[in-house]
Amino acid sequence: QVQLTESGGGLVQAGGSLRLSCAASGSIFSGNVMGWYRQARGKQRELVATMTSGGTTNYADSVKGRFTISRDNAKNTVTLQMNSLKPEDTAVYYCNYARRPAFGMDYWGKGTLVTVSS
Image 1 (spheres, rainbow, N blue to C red):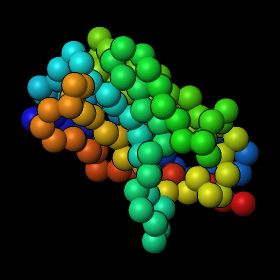
Image 2: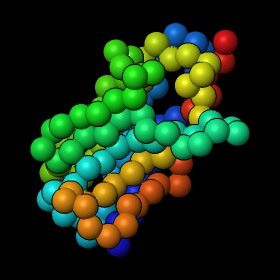
Image 3: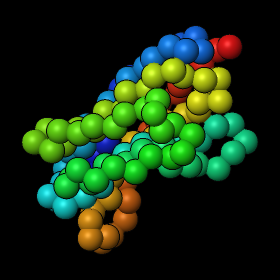
Image 4: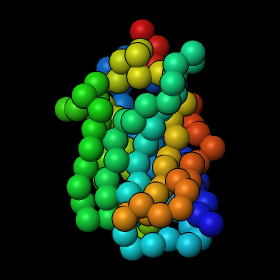
């Protein structure tokens, strides 16, 4: 079992910045991918950014150049720095953990709300 604890989020004006953090605990395997997904009201959950334990990143086109993902493998934490936020970034952001090579289920945090006002 893996537990994910998220922090950060909140209300910010368009053009502002926020930082999300997620700490994983439990049965953490050295090969893994951690990242962030988001779900806006009435929409499906979508990938925002992920980073493998080896350092490979993947970003949604909509956030490239504005968001930066980083992680500390020793602490099992992943951070999402969000700059130049737009109203369309408003969503519940979920932390995700999965083993790599893939094995078993993905794990999800409870989610943290990010609201960007225009």
